[in-house]
Length: 268
Ligand SMILES: [Mg+2]
Image (cartoon, rainbow, N blue to C red; front, side):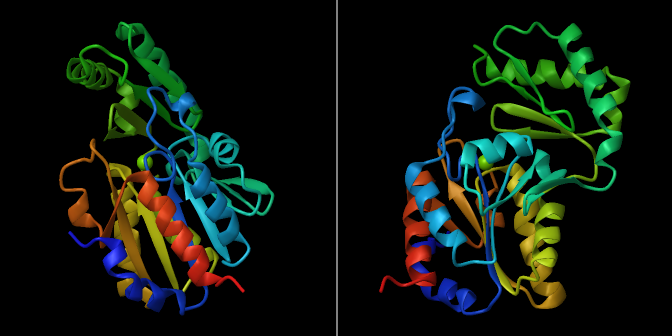
């Protein structure tokens, strides 16, 4: 494992390539995991340095499985670009857009949510309806592993669910249209902002798609970037093998953002 703070010179090399952009996951990366998604808050230091970075970089983006409206509310920085629902919704320069094909799915998602609600005892479970996607949270269930198996079994019984992609997150199961991923969203952002270099920070399974997009871009058109894996106690297996460098938790991300903002724009 390569700790990012031991390789800051490599990051300086990237920063010198302009345009340089920063894309970060939200939950578990700039915000500590909370018992329910509604209780999670962005770390104040992370917010402070992201705001600083917005004045100096062409792109500072937050990407999340949450709806784009929720991500915007949660991070609350005007100059940032927000990507929600695993890349299906983007909020940039004052307007929101849907990814191609996303509009076909709200009916399918609604049918799956209704089917799950009928089949599952809802004690300790919470289905988050994000219109274009849904997440079934089981963090508060007394037997999380059993809950996970019950949710997966219920999904197998629903014909509409076959049209969707199922992703196992930490204590949640995401249900989303097949083409959507943080990887496609990150590739779109890199192209849209014509980035020559950049960093991606994330802490969970769905971020691996984005890590791979960073590597694919490096092979494809000479983009230079690093995928930074944020280590937590609940880190999925094999996750770190996909990252170029690591940081230890949200507080370490805050320290890194501080270093980055001071390196991008040294104090006078
Ligand atoms: Mg996360």
